Image 1 (cartoon, one colour):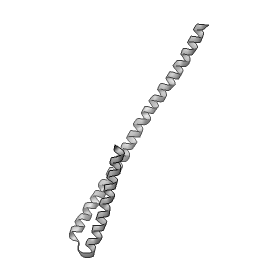
Image 2: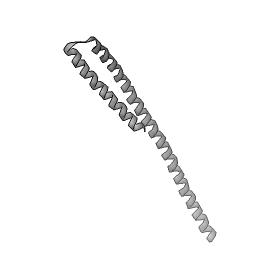
Image 3: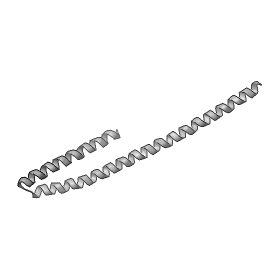
Length: 97
């Protein structure tokens, strides 16, 4: 009878061990998926920032050509856009570390 009990315990142990390994494998897959999703989200953010950078360069060219009140307006707009992109970059950097 002791052998039957040992065999039953071994079977239960093996089942539980198998379930744990299955969960560990699923967790590994979820971790990889999350890392990919995070990377994809960061790529999208960086792409959006590169588009904003192009607009900033356009505004800088406008600033160079403008004068008077238009110069002040363009300067203020440019400063706000630069601050926005700087904050966005800092946010991405802080999430990456």
